[in-house]
Image (tube, rainbow, N blue to C red):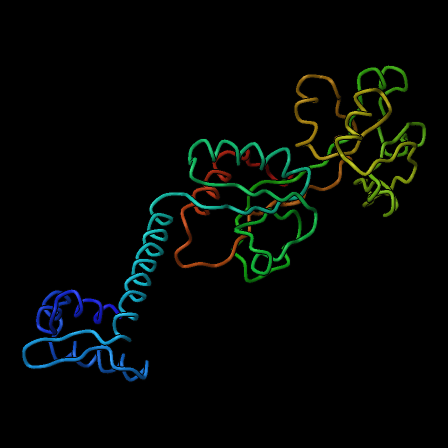
Length: 291
């Protein structure tokens, strides 16, 4: 197609061959193959001149537009590979995604304003290929062995309560003391038999709960208001613990932390929007040990 357009614009096979840096014989071969494929004659040639047939004139205009579209497409890909740009689709667990990934996605966009971020918060494991995600954040065991996985940090749960609540009901020292306390529980955990704490003899279930909610931040706000003891991710209550709004208790009995990974598809030439965002997360998410 490119050869045919060059022949039309150059006026003859020889000039087109020089422009394309191929032989005039090869130019003629390409034009003949094109005519055979289309089943129509495109050029009428004599020893002195050439002219387009009606079919050739129509094909020339469409071919020229098609080649221009192809050049635009190639330029777009080149721009994507030159610096981070385009849409970056991210899947992350609800709490970790809201507390950690969303703020870092915002600072990433400040660095690379040509990137458009689509962050989906969900506790389900999405299919990166079928659902079109560039990367996902996974907590715990990794299910997809064919994905690239980079360790990010550890996901910890903490038990805490407001100073006012602890002043009224006392500070629990062991899981056995929780029977005399008001425990706040997430609806999902409640359906799985309650809190799962680490005891000296192994995991211990705490089923007593006086307040349930299907949202971690809702439980956090209830705990700040003095409703009881809270078991939630450290990332959700970090600022409250630092400010003293909430106080951590039963530290040695908190559930075992789980590893957090960044996962994405194998690609020999990943786009800068992905590689730079992964680097951004690895640089700014605090590294935490398993214990």
